[in-house]
Image (cartoon, rainbow, N blue to C red; front, side, top):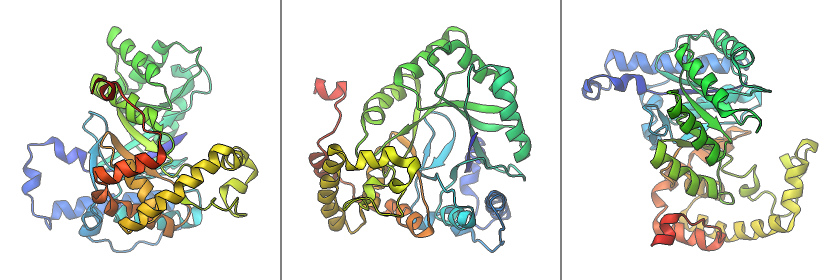
Length: 370
């Protein structure tokens, strides 16, 4: 089961709005910041030892990085536009999470993270892998076990992984609705579903008075655009489904490290990533590397790295609630988070230059009408 944890102030924003007038150094605000950092410490401790240290209120808010916060679809959940995704190296998990947290990141997406402690003002999401027919007897023991290990009564969002094509949509929607009605979750979302499947789920929910999904997790980067730029915006306007994206660097392809072949220590050199190696050395892969060389010139003009340009390009799409960053070391994470500083430089002219190089801009119905 994959678990995502987001430390966010959304619960504080359900009141009468007086919180905005609260002094930044008031005891309540300080306590909230400390509580959220304690939670990050708890999660990091699940990977190994954790050494507590002081963290200031300024660091906890992430204002010094210019981090942006967006609603998850049309729900009331607010998450940082950058999230920390894949970070499997346990020995540096604490360091990675601390860097992300102090940079204003409040969304942590990982696998098998179980932590105890107070809930505070967190948004916690988890992903269900059906492994077969999505009924109560199969999917709930895993969810309940996850909640028990994290010492939580509920999660904010449950993401349903794409089920078998033979599974009736009604069963899926009823199962997720049951999870919410039983108090185990507040919302549910989809992961790697097609636009048609998401719309089908919404129609079923309307027909049987059930609860529809609020967000889709989708792959999105310079070389994969159709779903996030055309299909999901239509769903957002029709039914309010938002987008949380992953793989902004296309499994490392966009970093430029494969320009001269496959480095020995790279992911593509591993046996389990043979498919990635084949993709890189293919004719399409060589064309992509040529385009990345051209994009490097734009990055240099903007005073940033190619990965930062690629992440900022994803962020320029306001239909994306959050971009999940995969990382293997602190330096890489710090570099990618720096894309926040590049975002203001993503003018329409720069975006047009990038589109001209890529030559893969998808066209929506609106484009054809114009």
